[in-house]
Amino acid sequence: MQMPQPRGPLTEELFGALRSGSDDFYPVLAVGASEGEDTALALWVLHELHYRGIEGVPDALEWDPQLIRLRGVLERDLESRLRERWTPPGDLRFVEDFFDWLAEQDGASVAGHVHRDADREQVLELLRVRSLYHLKESDPTAWVVPRLGVRAKAALMELQYDEYGGGDPNRLHHHLWARGLAACGLDPSYSYVDEAPLEVLEQNNAMSLFGLHRRLRGAALGHLAAFEATSSLPSRRMAQGLQRLGFPAEIIDYYTEHVEADAVHEQLAVRTICGGLLAEEPELEADVWFGAFTCLDLEDRFARAMLERWDAADEARKDEVA
Amino acid sequence: MSEDYDHPDVVLCPGGPMLLRGRHVVEDADGVAHETTRPVTAVCRCHKSASFPWCDGTHKVLPEKLRPV
Image 1 (cartoon, one colour):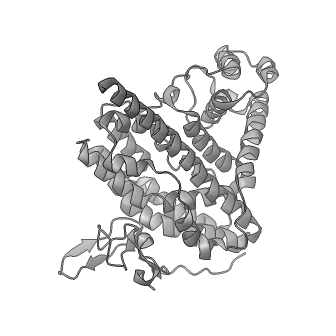
Image 2 (cartoon, one colour):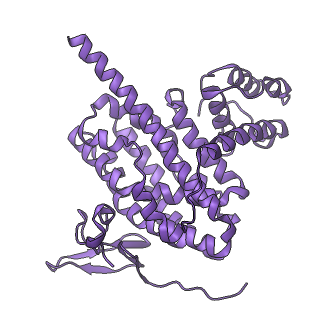
Image 3 (cartoon, chains in turn cyan, brown):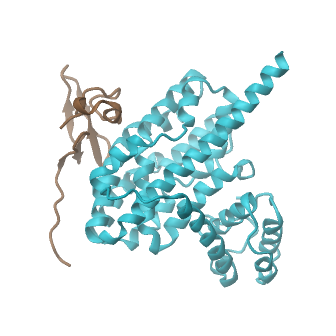
């Protein structure tokens, strides 16, 4: 992918340094953490060095000690912000109580808006900003595999095998997404990072944070469980909304695939993956809940931000007509 | 650790679907055969799925008394 556009002093300094060919990042470290999108984009780019890399940035910088130091500082800030938002759910037991707990959460939903009200431009915008997640899909969770005991590892691979197409590259989920995007006339690479709001960057950064740190394996699998358990029904609404607006079959298929796939995956994620993890490492129960909460909280923040934006745009259009 | 683990072919999820591991052909009430396509398949037990005989998560929005035991 191309280097994104900087969004503040930290990304100005960092992106310039990454392209400079030098391995002296002390001036970047001196900028320190700033706030909001600038920080989130810096962390997103540092994480990207561990996935597919960035054009013009030497591959060896993935493990540069100064960049790892900066990544660590940004991740610590992100994790403490996420933990501040979270309240542990009392004496609930994850495997037994998760679905009931989930039913009581009522976060905002973009799928409901796409289903009934969204116009074509809004859906295209959603597909563009969501592409940051969908082009990786299960990759952040794949980091977790070698950190697990026997039960949880086998269980996670049973789910991941399906995510990665069961050996068929045509069925690999992030490839299905890329095909869907291309059919909509959109670019199936990371070309929409510059459009991604803070909420999208944070969603992706949280998944990479949980995946890249063995210490946070419980949070990674709790996040997975919450993600899968909030996917089937919204995917159906997305598919129906896309049909209503006459979108191509490839992108509709992506969502219909997730209706049935995630009806399986939610059961596996809660019962066999988190169940296996907690049978082997019961001390991780709080972190599993933390990951699940974070998934829902970040999705709620994302949905509210998008719905407010679209609402404001609709109001402005109405004013113009009047 | 060298213990044996349970790994059933069929799992009844409380309040939810039946999970089937491996390849199977499921015949619905009209005699139509449906072949499983993924490593694990969720078969609807609440009879409200729009993707019947496969689960689509609809059981989660049903009142508790209408969910499968």
